[in-house]
Image 1 (cartoon, helix red, strand yellow):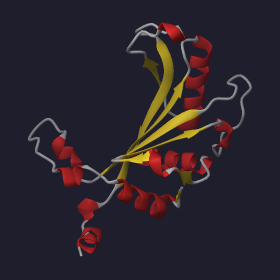
Image 2 (spheres, helix red, strand yellow; image 1 turned 90 degrees about the horizontal axis):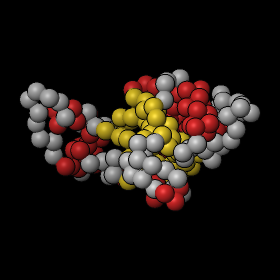
Image 3 (cartoon, one colour; image 1 turned 120 degrees about the vertical axis):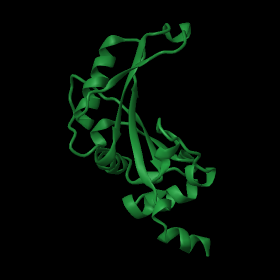
Length: 175
């Protein structure tokens, strides 16, 4: 009975909040430049540098060093790129990659993405994709003025609801 009531309630809808595409490159500057160039080709946005928070001598990484690149997309661009990236993953997502409010998956080779061709200067790179989900009305918990409490039942989107959303909206197979 509660499921039927929630289907008609527009505040229980789920939508994509943001998509973050990340490429880890290590401490070398040339792969860093290649990753930023690739992310700009894929997303059409200017990527940011991922900065190390800790020193790791085993990987020759010092604190504050550039170790990757990422780009964050929101609104309609996020929906469009999510479709392309899910198609690159053959519209298949592992069940364990879906958690509360998010979905994470990887792409081994960027040439799998539709509309992107191989560039010998960039080489072959893979990437991690994180998709965050949200419900309408969540802004009241994060805005600056007149912030209000958002109950856990509204702020937490269960994996089952995300699976249903992915199957309906993007025709994704959960394996």
